[in-house]
Image (cartoon, rainbow, N blue to C red; front, side, top):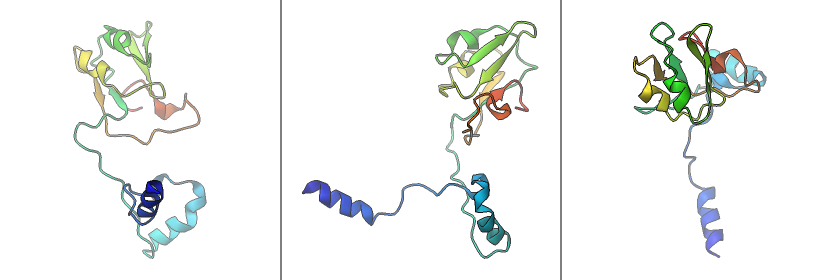
Amino acid sequence: MRILQVLLRQLFNKPATNRFPASHAPASTAGFLARVTADSSVLIPPVPTPPGFRGKVGYDREKCIGCQLCVKICPAKAIEFLPEDKKVRIFVARCCFCSQCNDVCPVNCLSMSEEFLLSTYDKYAEHVIVTDNKS
């Protein structure tokens, strides 16, 4: 009986989250975006990220000294050392966003950005492999 009360109460509660931003919606929503452009519909802005948010890893290739501490400490093995360049490559699809690589870096060439819309079907897509700040 208690579960029925909870279910009925939840049916009438407002959602706790924002709807997904239309700027990242599939191409099938072209009609909606056209109405937004014509000011007949409202575009819901994304929820702002809180302070200290750990999103996609940023990497300043010029500051990197190739010490490999980030490679050694990464629990997800998301960081690969490139011996020919003495730099690293970060596979965001493997990253668990723990920020341990940022904490151990002696020259602060790694950082956590506010970027969080990273899902893709291709784990080797250009936007989920970090080789420098442009990635």
